Structures are given as structure tokens and as C-alpha cells.
Length: 217
Ligand code: DX5
Ligand code: ZN
Image (cartoon, rainbow, N blue to C red; front, side, top):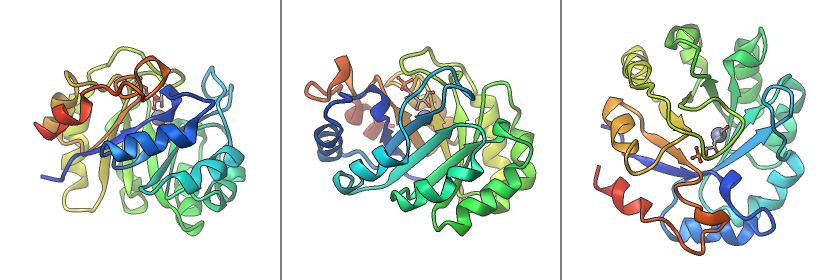
């Protein structure tokens, strides 16, 4: 089995102090830092763009995992790559040409991720697997942190078998906590995004006992 990685989402962190929040969760063992980019169009919320990614980049010693919940995607890929994104994930639902988008992400020098909303079947990425380094399975409808987990374990299992021996991560995003993490890990996920389970009360000053539970999986 692939080792489990934890990717805290700074969407749930203190927006006035991202540098300190990132340093705190990395000190606690975070493997990646997940950055949720929202455009108020593809999803009903607004967050931040490439300038913010560039500003936090020096604080990230691990991996900057940028989740684009925007449409269109293609005009912004290079800006996020130049801002230092290691992984750029775009949604399969964000436009008619996700294949081209994944090619453009790889051409930018970043690793390419493709995300699936809860209503989108695993088969939507069947013809994309040779272009993807990561498949992100949304276990909430994207747009907000702190929502309840939607069970997608059947989809995760199907994806893990479709992926076969390719080197592709399955990332789970939404409602991951010490209760749901073991379910998705058992189904074949290896990267777990967690916002509100890590940043309690808008700050990592009082971190959840999250890492301990993950290590126990
Ligand atoms: C949802 C975002 C998630 C969110 C997860 O649209 O893509 O990354 O931050 O937050 P929690 O872990 O609180 O569900
Ligand atoms: Zn996300």
C-alpha cells in the first residue's frame, strides 16, 4: 500500500497569518500544504489567487498542492506554476477540454491533478490517467470547508483498480477527520486533505490530535 500523506488545507487556517500556520502544521508532520483557489463562478465562494500562492511559497518546506476551483483554468496555469505550485489540480467539470488542461499543467513544469465532484463518476478520468499524477475525489461539494463527508468509497476503489500500477495518487478532499480517514485509506486513497480537522477554531495554535490517528491507520 502507498504511505498515507496528510495535506492540511489553509482554507481553515488564520487568513491573517498563513506563514505561521503553515510552519506550525509542517512542524506537526504535514506532508503537503493544500491551497484552495475559488473564483465565485465555478464554486460559490472566493478565496485567493497566484499572488497569495507566491507570498506563502517561501513558508512551505514540503509541497504546495494547489486545488483550482475555477473556470476557465487554462489562462491561469502558468501564473500558478510561476508562483511555485508543485501540483496543480483542475476539475474535470471546469470545461470541455480537461485533456488539454492537463497537458498544459505538465508543460508548465508542475505535476497534474484532476478533481471529480461527488456527482461525477470515476469513468470521467479513464482516458486521462496517462496525463495525471493525482486524482482528487471530492467528498463534499466544493466551495466551503467544514461540510459533512459524502461517502465516495466505491468511487475510490474503482479508481484504484483503474489506475493499476501507474504512479498516481488518490487524494480525498472534504470532511476528512479521524473517523472518515480510515474509510478512505482502506478504499485506496493515499493523500488526505483536511481543513477543519487540523485548524480548529481558525488557528493551528491548538492543533487537533489528527496526525496520531492517521499514523494508526
Ligand atoms: C472544499 C475544499 C477543501 C476544504 C476541505 O471546497 O476544496 O479543500 O478546504 O475542508 P474540510 O476538511 O473542513 O472539509
Ligand atoms: Zn481542496
